[in-house]
Image 1 (tube, helix red, strand yellow):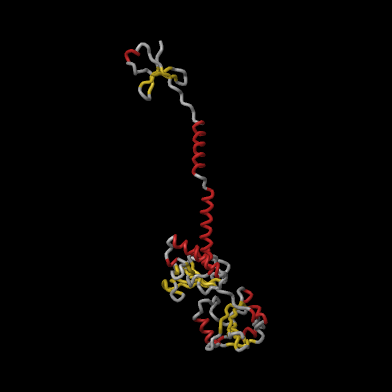
Image 2 (cartoon, rainbow, N blue to C red):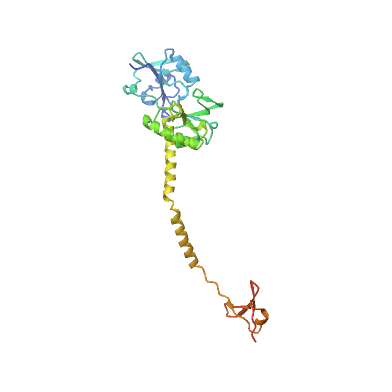
Length: 330
């Protein structure tokens, strides 16, 4: 048996709904218009508590919205539907917090539909502001900042606020803006027990080797069984996202090792290159050594006067290590 539920419908956006929006029921009908299901979007569905009435629902969604409600405050022209004890009824939110029961508002396929899924992401490092979150076609539909950084999700971690999207963010978007998915988000990825165990070991060992701070780890060490396990509030998608990054890093490292040549081959190539470099260097002019017969006896057996030719063919005598004096000829 289907549980008792309630749903909220609100007019679609756009100028086409201008004559319908916020109009009391009597004035709407007086203008020849009707409350047509085609003009509305389903924005919220939830279980109906025993204490829920049209009045309590109006106050809740007008003054104290649930975190996952992405519509505007409940107002005139909205529609509330109630499914209770197998019976479905629809009510137009009228002026003076009154309600007008509608006939034929619901369509047969409405009973197979549910409200759009909501994805909640916490800003754990800073208040939500310009440039601190990704803007997508799916939101954020709602932004909430706390007065200070406070504990959320029953004390599991702390956050400055949260954002609501109608579709999930990618792991890269979450990492880029340091957002954390709420544990209650719809699960897009469900790992098998074998995948969960294998990925937890890989991620856990990597986190341990990199000395990742405990507050940023996705796993913890279970000493009784000697294995790493996924933390309770971490989703399968978060674990799988980090696992893929670890594996990509390992693949890059393995590729670098495969491309690295053996030492012997590197030395051989270095020697060959050195030989090529030496072969292309210009040859320096050779000094011309000669002994002056007139003075050789005076210089001693180990003393020599050195001469060399320059580019013009002139003969120079070397004086010291760096300088030469042109030899004059009569």
